Length: 228
Image 1 (tube, rainbow, N blue to C red):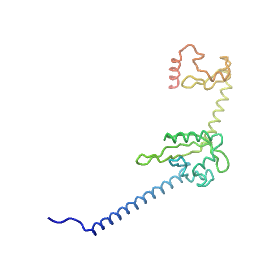
Image 2 (cartoon, one colour):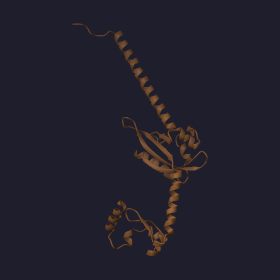
Image 3 (cartoon, helix red, strand yellow):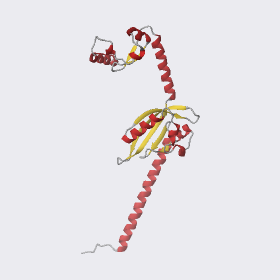
Image 4 (cartoon, one colour):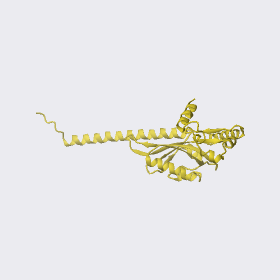
């Protein structure tokens, strides 16, 4: 029977070959990671949105070029909690609460807040953050994107003011209800018609003054009107 045992030298050679193969795999893997990171950085820096990332410690560890151009600050200044220095004082607590609460629950979030631009103007941002997981499902932090919605909010506010002005100028009593029949807006003519102040009206439900239908019937009718 032939002896298939290997010599010490042969085993050493096989071990060296395995080491070289392992090193080659590591080199290829690291190269792929590096190329992926470079591709991500290129895409992030050319994207028309502000992008940020944070680690498992809640601290931010990445901002793309559009973010840095927007704030006029360096990456070092924004890292960690540095970015929060630019939040409008009125929005600060609300912003940080939503971020930390969502972070602890590993839930996505959407919030609006004002961030100081490089020229000193506070601009409204819509920030969407999502939890980031590894291919193995391990939580590794958050990634988020922000869009400047200042002009959109200005347009919305202008339209809301116009509609409110038209509403108040109308001689007829007009009121607006939500899907539950609660009053969300009413003009002065409607308040006078019912004999309530505007503050009282805005705390009322249509069932409070309309006795023709039960509250359940009114909700059904409101739903039918909204569907049509």
